[in-house]
Amino acid sequence: LKKKYNEFNKELKQSGAGKMYAELQEDPTMKLLIDTKLEKFPWWPELHGWWCTNPAFNYAFSTADTGQD
Image 1 (cartoon, rainbow, N blue to C red):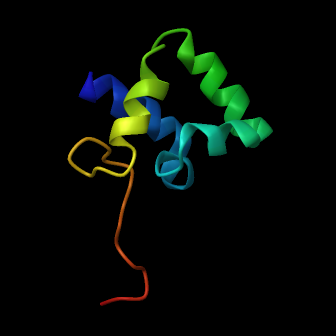
Image 2: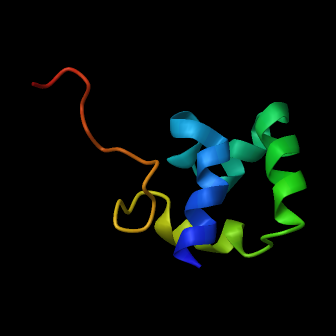
């Protein structure tokens, strides 16, 4: 599951991988991308609710502050 989840997130890029599902559904481009991908991986919204901010599961999400060295 983790592998498929991260493959899905690669399509969302850095900006989408750390957002909640409801937030992503507000953006028409992201909504279309997610809806087409859900056909092959329908468990993503539930997993994303648990894993979106956990770097052990979501490799695309980064908690690093870009202003730090």
